[in-house]
Image 1 (cartoon, rainbow, N blue to C red):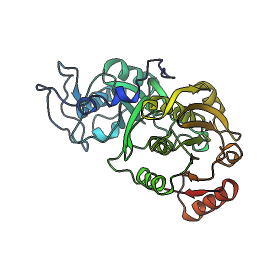
Image 2 (tube, rainbow, N blue to C red; image 1 turned 90 degrees about the vertical axis):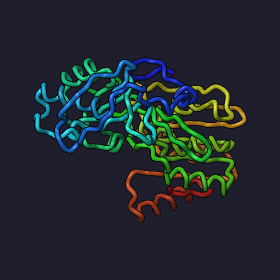
Image 3 (tube, one colour; image 1 turned 45 degrees about the vertical axis):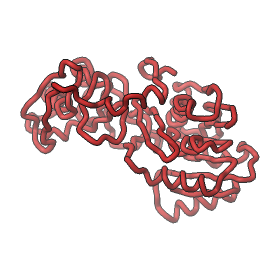
Length: 332
């Protein structure tokens, strides 16, 4: 599969997971040290001969460019630069040392010209995104990619196995992986208790909970999201993780450009499908239009994980889903 932003080949899950522990490890001569994020950086260093540099010093280099371009006052603390997203992003036990093209920066301080300079001069930076203070997909809004590529991978360690999940920082909800994810664990417990023939992830995002069900080898899994970019990445992530599933080749049925143009859609449209000893399907559309096209399975389990967690609203959503789709539904 190719990246829809920069065209590079996206690696399968196995390739990302191989050597993951060493991905951000220093070599024996890497410079060490931490910078205080509450004050402006007082020192900087270039990459080591091995090509890596501590995250703090990469952010200090970005700080220097922003100051030079007028985006930051020299007295601004280092933390004001923005939010770094590592590629791949996973729970890290020690400060990371970054190789080239391993950081997507989410910032409110950059202009397009400043972002181009950051990507051009700081080898660790993969892309720069203008943070608009929104949640991508809610009301159809997105951040803005200013320069480079903002597609990155998250690694989630779940009870049935590791998942690699690609997403675009400017168009998809960002949720950093944690060592223990309560929603993932709740989903896994529900699957092991109910042993469903069909699992539906009705608000799938880029596919986390639905792919947990697929790793648990549920015979039929359906992932759906109303937001086009998220639904496309859910289909991509099905393909990326296919070797851990009981499926043959994954067929992607829609282009990223088309799903981005569609934005929020009502009638479910196929995005990807995989068949074998399991069947996994991905749709882009409203969860309320999904029940009529679900496979006929007596033992149904659905997870609905919408934005906004007001208890009365969640109870209404669960009741409505059960009325129109049947089976068991839970909200993690």
